[in-house]
Length: 109
Image 1: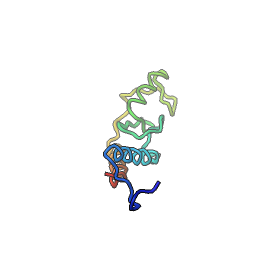
Image 2 (image 1 turned 45 degrees about the horizontal axis):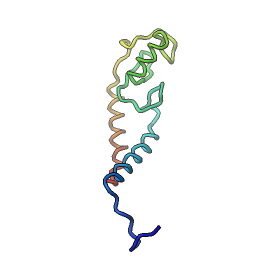
Image 3 (image 1 turned 120 degrees about the vertical axis):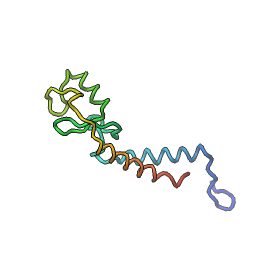
Image 4 (image 1 turned 135 degrees about the horizontal axis):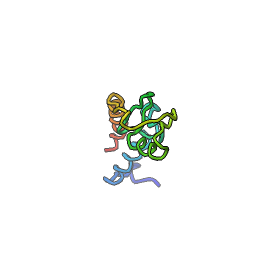
């Protein structure tokens, strides 16, 4: 319905938080492919790079290696988590993208 004077209702703190979460969720649904884990497609938080150059979330890769007898999920070659190195540059790019995505929700605060 309409409100007296035609004004929008004032949002309480819970509504503002909900709107921020909705905005952040919408932004996260548009994560660039290069910032996603090769296995689960989610935003990388602790990216590691395999010797073949694929980026994975560390915990997702560790779980996958336990499930498939230590084989790289992309090449099928033997792989140990110790053979992968943290990708600090990718982690920085994820951090910058995340800050940008969060900034989209700030007008609701």
